Length: 157
Length: 314
Image (cartoon, rainbow over all chains, first blue to last red; front, side):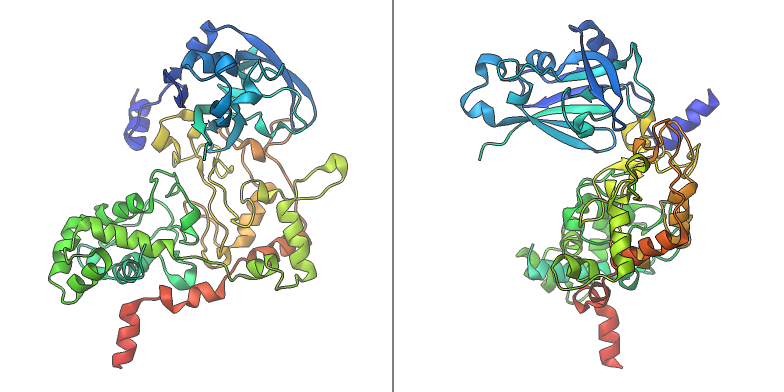
């Protein structure tokens, strides 16, 4: 208890549960917790790690998260909405982008997921609690760790 | 940004009246000859109290988005307020500093030239300081000249550069130190935070202090390596006295821990051990020394205007 108090006093902040925020060009901004993701439709995806070994993950399709937030997906993903993109931010500051069309089932059969489990277990420390799995990519560089924010932005000039 | 704003900012950067007892200025701990860093592990505030972390070098800040070792300030203006108001660094609010400067002949005219009216305010002090800091651009190092095609690398520099930017891949027989994963591209930094394995139980929470997240414990911003040979000691706590000690750390002394950067783990989740040879370390040092910009550290546009004035009088 004393230790806990000291930690809070020294850092000035209480420990918080990890969440993924969905922000930007959305109708409904979301702050998703682990239990929110557990209650959403679940799906699986596989990807190779940087050492070339295949792993199986489960989580929620990014497309489902975007739908829940009211992003222009499916039939709405046309015209100038095709200039929108998803900016994924991770705890360590790493960021990657996807055009919305890369994530939409009307454009592609590939399902990118926000994974919270690997081989049926929670993701290991340093990687989880939430990471991205992008199946079929030659490099694992967008399979980023510790995702904290999914921001929808407009690249229209 | 204006020429007048930058000039005012330079004067303020070196004006000791910005500290409570008129003994230190920004330039006291951010010294041009040391790449705008301090040679102490922890700088001393106006009252002699050591700072909590090592003074960061100031170089190419125009391209930096998050400041301090833990990234808690998202603008140079927000950054500048912190040491000014810290009770043990400079020890007074920008508004209090403004009150003192109003009594100094000449400042009102400099503020009028920079901001259109002669009002001396704390907000304007901070804005002018940030303007000056944005001009601290280093682009005359040997590395810059190499990128522009104006400098031919020595053999050691070439091998050091290759090692620096190549990932180690023993399976494919590729030798690299992988420094460029974080110290990426010509900027030689990236806007990311990593626990680089200095301690298994970090005494400084680092980024956790900003986010409140346990997975950020011991994470610090990846700093620029521009002028790195001039900015010893190294790390957030100045624990390494020289670059040789830094290379030794990354070569075989990275410690395990729950938040150790994935970039510094091997396929079995252990801390990587590069076991750099003395030749490889020498080559990496040759590359790191290329990042020293002697034009930048002697540029009169960045120098202490009070020191110049004193010399003229003498």
